[in-house]
Image 1 (cartoon, rainbow, N blue to C red):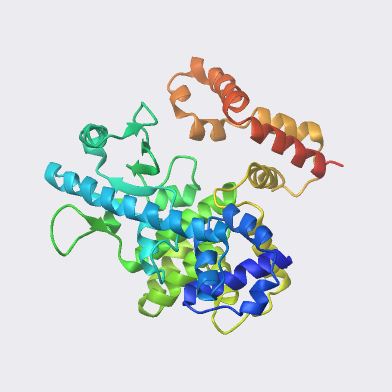
Image 2: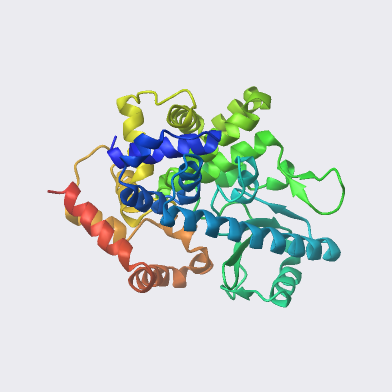
Length: 374
């Protein structure tokens, strides 16, 4: 394990357990390098908390903690306002992911958030847009989608979802969560707030991570989330039920490996040695950062083309990436499949989008193809 990675995880371990790391050990770290790595994975506030616990002041980490706390205060105030409007308008809603996970961390602001994700009643799409625009938010996408993004300076970003996954997701996950209403529970206090049971919340955050992990990567923060969640809720979960659902979604191996790796990395009992397989898995988390990377996505895409076990040429990869099969195109560009005559335009539109929006992906795929075919 890289020295800076080891140092970052050492700090995070103490952060999530509320302890103070060894001051001399921290003093010997390259904190600039650790900070850079922590920013890549959106864990600077957690690392900064550990430094503060050790009595060490580093301006970069102090600012990261301050900014995270400030953002949390803004989000909390806005969430109360927006959810109050949902109640008035009779829109059922459910905050998701990081907004709920942050409450399990030892101190405010430790779990960084870039946005707040809220699931809502898709039949109330127009009413929701009116509420958000009246509150001073600007919609980033003009057309109705599976999620709408609303922004308000200086830092507020809300993603409003009508589904738990987009059509790009793994087929098993799409099937499992198609009728997601069966998982939603009404709040005991009444009203329109909905929530998952602890079992289903754990399954959903695992599914969300699994989907990102297999597409473009997801970084090490989910490992910290997993450890914190298991420490707070693991003893009360119905593991027989969870095992059955993991089997249905194809996540059994992923969940086990992630949970065991997180426990080894963040347990308060010290740094356990990782197996070669765990080292390799950790590297997959590390190479992508919080929101994944084009190179990770390119490697995952090409790996699927190697499923037949054959050695392929550069031409093969280029052809398959430029002209995917019809099943792939139907899934990702369904509107072009309403009429046979418009299907060819799906390929034209796909190439246009990549050339204009995802130029970095082209470069990454070419790099990865060259590596595979040397």
